[in-house]
Image (cartoon, rainbow, N blue to C red; front, side):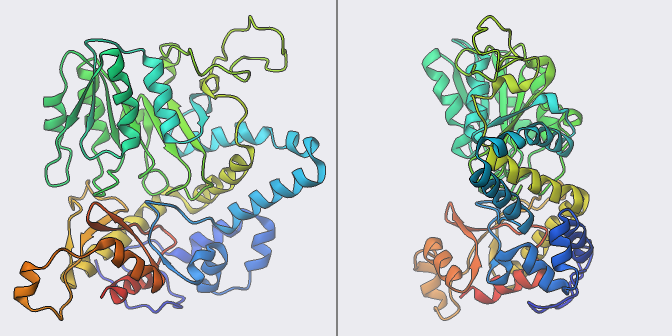
Length: 430
């Protein structure tokens, strides 16, 4: 990929085959008329700093851990707090319609219908709803992968008390291969659950093939989407996903402590709701003493009571940002910045371990830092590996934010990053 040189305050964001950033930022600013007026006269870099304040100080490359909050999201949350502080319940009730709006916004992002979306606390909450609702028992198996984040492991391990067996697909060079998924599935498999993107390697699973393999064996297919949604495009219906759980605090650049759950509509009645039923699970919630009401006909029946309204207000703004930016352009920039990260790290002698096939790449790039050039070759061969936790702290002191994971450094740029941010990482490495 051809890459032009840029400085941190460059106003030319269009680099190589990346979609130009400045037009995306102008569309994002237009989502909020007040913000649009405030930033109308700003140059490109000043506009980026205004819309994504984290860029004023940091090369922020840590979206696989926690995303930054954009100015539109910050303003939306402030408006909610201000309204509630001035009008209490009157203002709170005025925000109720936003709940259905956000369901529709998220459904549009993943190619679903708003009736198929429920709010949860986080990914763990969503997957535990699925685990408890399937009512699996002795003789049943659940298949996941050995590289999964614990969020996509513990809900299934909890089922061991019912006699359910949990099987782990082995990883080969950081990859979860379809052939190994097929070899782990058998006639007892009831569910296959994988991540959209593996957190520790950046490997992008072939979800469509995994869904095909699960369905061919009569099993259902579940996805932890948190490391892909917001960075990569996904159509749940076209892919064959039955359940998808995600959170909003990473690549979706939304508030913390809020999750979303997609359920294929044909499976809604298949889930047996025993512990999740709440006062909002029925068609007329304010018919308070009518305990004979049936469940709601949509996925919202799974929501465990009153929702996080402040978080939903912020999420609405975050999803509006992605709609304005255009997910095709977002994905193209994320992947191009990740490619640039690979190229620069490799050129400097660091070992990139993230799988690099065209359909395997994501926004996550993991690498093993090379030892300092001041060490002799003999010392390099015998000394311990670089302390990635200490190195991460050193990088943060140099205003470059990344994560240590599994003995590696994990880099995760988002669409609003620029090549100069990647160069700041390279220059900050010892």
